[in-house]
Figure 1: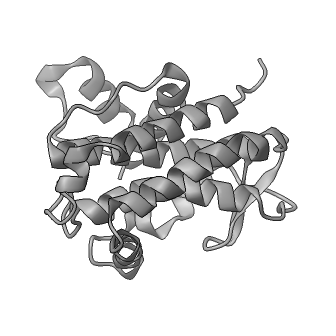
Figure 2: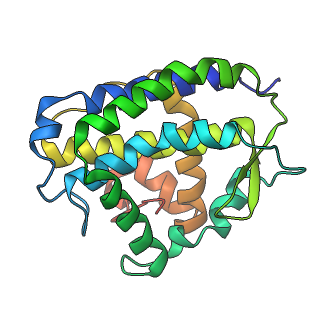
Length: 213
């Protein structure tokens, strides 16, 4: 069975980011604490907004000669296993807070501009293109890279909705399905098959959490 082409899904995910950023209640809550520890709403939204911007920038870069598997990417990534106050996670929050300082409107404008540029950039991306992620030192195949960005969009979109108090707009299946599959694999790696299956099927023996991160 051929691999799915996730380029249209990533455009839909970028539209989701624009939908969240466009909300007046998001702008009004900018300086309030978010649902995530140590993050104001503005910094959290900036992290969400950065996902299409990062994707556009890295897709425009020079391809890498080889790529690693998506699950290996998360196994190697320090932020996945790091504590809240570990340097890697402090750095992520600090960078997002700096992006948020100018307020909502410049970020929204940047994401809208990225959405306009993405179709042409994505059209040039071969499925086997290895997209270098410079701060990690390794690369992912095109659709693995897009899945990782979409996971960030889906998860942090829900974080923003929980922080501000609205229901996140529904996502199409071609965005949600690869993200849920990725989160399920990561949850099994962290908690084990039995915990994940029980959480999904048996309320009487469901564990306290099967969070992937």
